[in-house]
Image (cartoon, rainbow, N blue to C red; front, side, top):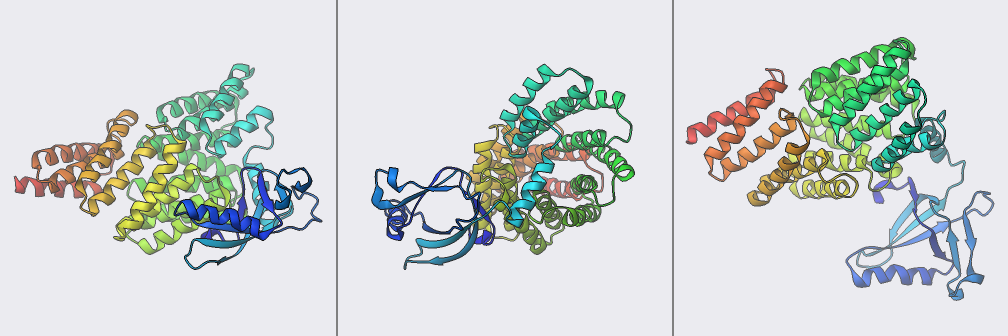
Length: 466
């Protein structure tokens, strides 16, 4: 919360408060008696003249009238003000909050942009499905779109629903199914839409993202370039969809090891988004996140950490606490801390990411494997080889079930396990896993990619030990 001072805070249930400070302090102190948690006394400033203020004095109908209870409606939104410690052991704090109105500038800007992002021209179930996808509620969105698919009457409707089901499957980590749905959507769209229709560009972008997750970078780049070509022909130069194309192309270059072009593309995307979107829009966070990834790959850990923290701050202020994008931020911050040798913070960050992913994603989602993989890397650096091997094996088990046999993430998993066996003195197993790594990387990456040279050097080193 200290990192989000000045931002917005929403309570996702009915909120019981009191006019009596001592009553509230009693509840805050109870938390401290039974656990090592921190008690927080929220002091709320309310302007009763705001017509939309969602609260009521329930003192007269409450069983405990002496508590002078004020009840706030669900999802009441407050701006976070000052914070101060009010005891001597750092376990009790006061946080000042101010109830926002419907015309709060930051809230209004973000709400309006979210309304635009969730297809205001759509109606009913269709718009609900889009909102569920934005919130990371993929299973619920899938139910909505299967109902709509059964009711679809025209090819245009079917193309749209197939596209949305592709987005759902991509979010669930079922990338083959995502590509299949996107391909169905594109096949219909190419017969009924103009070659420069922006809806077609959206489908090219979406299938490109799914190809990227599968490690098929050739089809990824081709798809995103098709989308960018349409956007450049039909949209203003600073349109958010142009930024999306630059963002997607940047991610492909990053995976291919072309960090200069990756950084350039992501910076173009960020520049457009900063001009056209609210400062706290999730897409701005995505750009900071992706720039941080590239800086990390370039060894510029200071700029990497700074970029990831900017992304995290936006996401903490605008997304639900269990949103997958928050897990991505914690994951990427953990990677940077690991590179910087701060293993304690690295492990904490990766465990936060894993906790969110285990709560919100299927158990065999590749992102869950990614968290296990990164936790294993930290344990390895801490010389805890047993926990490292267990974590990497958990990652490998998931990736073997969900990814193609030549996917780069499988190569990474084999490499980590191989290098652990090397450290543990089991050179035959080490060689076996590293040779699997080399086979995949030689098929999936350009011959000059630094990852290929690294694994060849590791194999040569192990052969000398044997």
